[in-house]
Image (cartoon, rainbow, N blue to C red):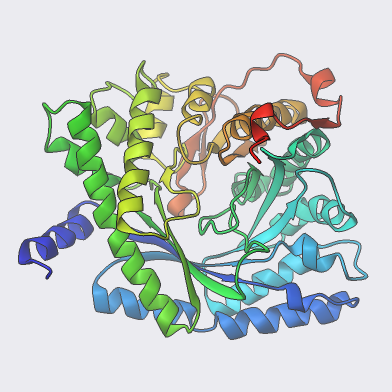
Amino acid sequence: MIRADEILETIEMIDRENLDIRTITMGISLRDCASESGERSRQKIYDKITRLAGNLVKTAEDIQTEYGIPIINKRISVTPIALIAESSDDSNYAKWARTLDKAAAETGVDFIGGFSALVHKGYSSGDKKLIESIPEALSTTEKVCSSVNIGTTRAGLNMDAVAQMGKIIKETAELTKDRGALGCAKLVVFCNAPEDNPFMAGAFHGVGEPESVINVGISGPGVVQSAIKKVPDGDFGVVAEVIKKSAFKITRIGELVAREASKRLDTKFGIVDLSLAPTPAIGDSVAHILEEMGLEKCGAPGTTAALALLNDAVKKGGAMASSYVGGLSGSFIPVSEDAGMIDAVKCGSLTIEKLEAMTCVCSVGLDMICIPGKTTAESISGIIADEAAIGMVNHKTTAVRVIPAPGTDIGDIVEFGGLLGSGPVMNVNNYNNCFFINRGGRIPAPINSMRN
C-alpha cells in the first residue's frame, strides 16, 4: 500500500527538485522498409514512422496530465539508416535524413535518432555513404540526430573511421556555423554503443530490438543532491545508501510511466534508462551533487572518486527497483547542459583532461564540450580515440560529442538554447598527432575481450 508520506515525497521531488521523465522514446524497426528504389524506401519509412508514432506525443501529454509527472521530450529512434539505405540506388543519404525530419515534424516529436552507422570492424558501402552524408544531413534538418559506432571491446577500434570522424565533425561545424555549430551537438561518436539508449544524440533502434518498443529515460540530479544534503555528517557508506534509495524511487516512477505508455500505444515496454542527465536549470546539476559530497568545485582532487560512488549507487538503486534498467544508466557529465560544470570550467577547476579521467567511471564520455574552432580534425580524432580506448578496455560505453565552433576561442561562450544550454570553449592540447591518426587500420581488441 502506498503511504501518504510517499505521495507527498514524490510531489516534492517533482515540484522542488526537478524530477522529470527526460524522454519517452519510441524505437521503430525499419528493416522491412528496404528497397532497391530509394524513393520507395523513404516513402515506406515515412509511412511507418507516422503510423506507429502518430499518437506518441498525445499519449505522453495525457500521461503527464493524469499522473502529474513532467515529460520533457518525446523522441523516436530507428534502425541505423546505413543498414536500410544500402539496398537502394542512392549515392547520397542526406535525403533520407530529410525524410526522417519530415516524419518527426509530422508526429510532433522533439528529435529522431538513427541516422547512424556501425563501423567498429569496418565499412560497408552503405556505411561509407551515410558517414559522408552526415554534414549535409545535419545542416539541412532540424530534428535528426546522428551517431557512428567506431569501436567495441570485441572488435577493437576502427582507426580509419576515427580519422574520418574528425573531418566529418569539422565539416558539420562549418556548415552550421551560423547556429553555433549546432550540427555537432546532434552528432556523437561511440565505442560500445547500446541498442536501447533513449537519449539523443546517440539513440538508434538496434537490430536485436522488437518491431517497436517504448524506452524511457528518467532524470533527477536535484533529487539526489537534496538527499545528500540531509546527511551532512554521514560517511561515504551513508551517502551511497541515500543515493541508492533516491535512485530506487526515481526508477519506479520511470517504469510506471513506461509501462503505461507502452500499454496505451500497444507497443512493447523496453527499458528504463536511469541516467542523471542535467539541464541548465538551477538545482539540476550533476556537478552540484559532487560538490554536495564535500568538494569545493567539480574538478577538485577527489572528483573522480565522488563520481564513481555516485554512478555505482545510482545503478544499484535502479537495479533494485526494476529488472529492466538498460540504455546507459548512471551519470552524464555534459558541460554545456550542466550549470555546475559550466561554472567549474569558467573558474579553471575543470579541464578536458580531468573530464576524460571522470569518464572512466561514469555513463558515457566527453559530452557537449565546446572547443576552439581552429582545433584540427586530427586533434578531434585523437580525442575520439582516447575516449574510445577507455570504453574498449573497460567493457563500457564511451562517446564523444564535441563542438568546434568556427570563430571561437578559449573562454568564449557558445549558445545553443533549450536543454542544450550554452557552453564555454575549453582548451585542447594542440601538440601534433597527425602521424598517429593517419596510420589507419584497426587497433586490435584487448586481451580481456576473450571471455568465452
